[in-house]
Length: 478
Image (cartoon, rainbow, N blue to C red; front, side, top):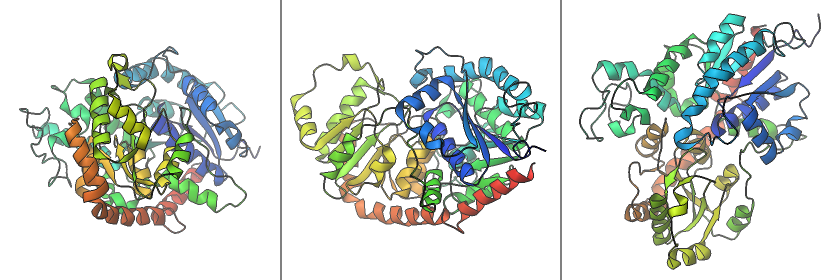
């Protein structure tokens, strides 16, 4: 038998958004380092962006058993795939990508008739159509849920929330306690549930989608999570009753770095950014004092209005702190209506600020000048800040971010939750609290969790062993 066709061949298919693509590229490289054959399936739109903004093609060229494949997402090139239009992506995936995916696996380049048939599929858990296709063609499938485990656990508890009458919300008190999420009874409020829980009725598209996801996930061969046992064990233990084959292998970005560092001939990880990173901000950081800078980024999908932009700007300037602010292109709704910028904001920004369109975030958070992170609380950003021991000021937008921000403030004690407010006075006060008043308190918790995270991906650590187990299980599927 051909040795190529008889070896494991893993197809990795991320949700076509920045966060999941980043996670799954890092998992892909970890599997390549273990000698597995890997095909990374990306949408045409995002693959072109990845190639134009990074050296990813040349970086992965060192792995002869790795290749990229592309698939259409059903949207026009001018569709922003972000903000309030991100749900259009899911319509396109269902209408066009699903049949193309089935064709690719049944008669196309990845079918059993090809020289390199796929023996295992790893997909983002939000690509719920993939499991039915995998079962039809007889290929084992693992889900990789790239949101936080604490956020995912609230998804699994949605039926209980509905049965208990806690969803839809009654009244307008978002501080009302939530009692039907096991393990979170003492601190979870209505405002801390995933954003779609604020829907006025149970027919909401996003809520129904989350319900479908939790029905599909336990049917998969296993569930991969970007976390480490020491951080999320209370919820991991409950998830195992639904998904016995659980693989917490994170923080995946640190895990990959650790494995690459063990191979002296290999370069560090490549950027996986879908925007061009402005390296000038690193030069600016080099000139700033130790832990004096607050870094601001609302991620790859979140938006803010022109009014919110001005509240943030005034609050940051009035705090008196140095700041590095990422303003992603097209992330300001009504940016053309901002009007003249007050002179005092421009002068203060020139004196102690730096504004860029996109930044190399992992490098920024690792820089000694950075002392705080004003974040949208996306799970990748939360883990990256945690690993570097950087306290967080959280301003969440959607999905699991509302849960993450509550955990940052109330469970992990890593920072402050600023959800549902955007007032310059509040922002000024909370920046001062993060960077000055409560700095030592947050740093103590941050240093402890950073140490645990790094230990988990070191040889013999919990995530290190779980990745080894995942690889062994993939090989056993042959």
